Amino acid sequence: MKGDAFCFDDAVFTYYVSTQHHDKFEFRKIFSSRELVVSHTKCTSVLIETEGDTSVCIIGLCVDSFGEIERANIPAFLLSCGDIEQLLDKTKRMAGRFAILFEKSGAMYALTDAAGFLSVYYSIDQKKICLSSCDELIRQHFGYPFSKESIVIRNAATYESHMPHDITMCENIKALLPNHYLDLTGMKPVRFFPSKEFVDRYKVAHKAGNYDEMLKRHVNLIDGIISEYTKYYEIVCPVTSGYDSRVNLSFLRRKIDNLLCYTFTKPSFKEDSGDYYVPPMLCDKIGAEHIAISDVCTSEEYFGDLKNRIGEYHSKYTADLAHTFNSKLKGKALVSGCVTEQIGKVCFGNSGPLFLVTPQFFLTRYDNYSSLTKKHIKKHMQAIRYHPNAATHIHDLIGLESFCGRWAAQSPMIYAMMGVNVLNIYNCREIIEGWMLMPRGIRREKYIHYKLIEMTTPELLDVPFNPSKRFERLKANPFTFWVAVHLKWARGKLRTAGGK
Image 1: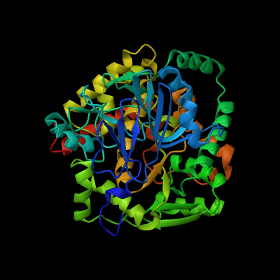
Image 2 (image 1 turned 90 degrees about the horizontal axis):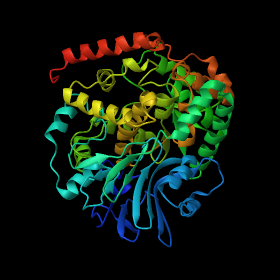
Image 3 (image 1 turned 90 degrees about the vertical axis):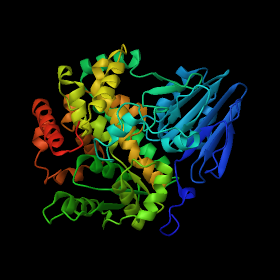
Image 4 (image 1 turned 30 degrees about the horizontal axis):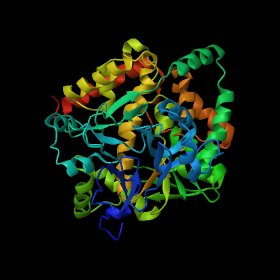
């Protein structure tokens, strides 16, 4: 940002792919025999390699969790893939925040990172190849109208919430979900996970029941990912009294000297609020610097200029958080906890039996009160249940595809437009698929969190988790959790004038 004015050129992780250059972007590169134009901001990396009839384009940050391939050499490494299946296999080890375009013998595909952290929105018009990190850029470019149905859905929840399944504010634009690739020939998404190989591994892992060796290997992978990230970014660590930020802290403290941690303070904080007094305790224990940052709001003029890029239907609160970050930590990168939250401890789906998994249950987790939302949740669930390998894993798949790929990716898109880098140190299919091998009941009890902290910075376990959270016990039992979220949703619907 230049002063208090919004500047699109400062955006990070922001791109637009089409047959024509987008006039809002200053930079461009040409990809594939079809001469697609990859328009991007100056702070968005684009790497392209071509050999014969094969081309690879990587947008964003893509690193090798194995630590064997330099970032600049990854496109060349992927050139050896003979088809999309080989590409999917070779990218399991890749971590970061990226989108990949892959062309082989005239066929062309798009793929996002493991959790969909760098969004791939696309026009469903088969005659127009068009992809972007921001759906509003596509909508404006083609003049697509807003969907009346989407407006109803969006207004049935706060704008911090997200749209269900793969829909956007426009019928002509969809979101590519994690666990899918996009066949650009017909602009059709294809589910590739769970695979038969994963299902076989899942059965073997459950019989063995020992996951510690796998987690030890993941510690090495995560350490390697952080080492790669720190080559390009100065990373800071948000800290609360919760579980996810503490796992982040336990890893980052090992790999980053003079680690800076921060907490956004709220007017509601009191001296006995866990998120007020626990973060300084944690940082004192490991010798890390901690700062508290008070809210700084964007001006109405700034937010209006921002909405000209991201669209009308987004929260000013999210923009205020990004602005608050920039007020003290501009130019640095923060680490999120969405993967440990949704897969590590099954936050969204909990560990209830499959017969409790209904569209209404997932609707309660959206905090949305429209029957139209429920219709699209049902469509998402049906797509999972019709897949031969997916039904057993519906909790994790909805969590990864909807809450990581849509909800957790929505705020970073806005942050990116405002020049804030948001990364995730677990965003790697090798790690995520490994955690999904573990029973949900074990993960719900924070087994992964406790073990990873124990293996890295065990002294952080001496400080209590979430001491101010009154309802933690409700989450411990899947049945009480199920009842509680339905009661909470029903109360919210009664209080919301827009509930329909």
